[in-house]
Length: 109
Image 1 (cartoon, rainbow, N blue to C red):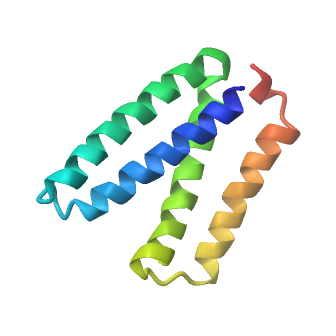
Image 2 (tube, one colour; image 1 turned 60 degrees about the vertical axis):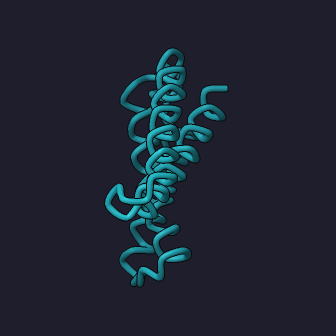
C-alpha cells in the first residue's frame, strides 16, 4: 500500500512542479493556488508513506521519481531538449527504484 501512496504523492508533486512553472514567477494566481495546494497535498501523502516505509527509501524514491518525471514533463510539455545522458540518468533512477523495490530488504522496513 505504501508504494501506491508514494506513487500518488510523486504524481501530485509533479503536478505541483508543473504548476509552479506555469505560475510564471507566482504572477498567475490560479497556478499559484494549484502549486500550493498540490505541494501541501504531496507532503501530506508523504507523511502517510513514512509511517510504514523507511524514511531513506521513501525519500530516495520520491526524489528520484520527481527528478525523472519533471525532466520528462520538461521535454514533453515545455520543449526542453534532452540528450543521451539525460535519458541515461532517467534510466539509472528507474533502475535504482527497481533495485530498492525488488532486491533490497531496506524497503521492507
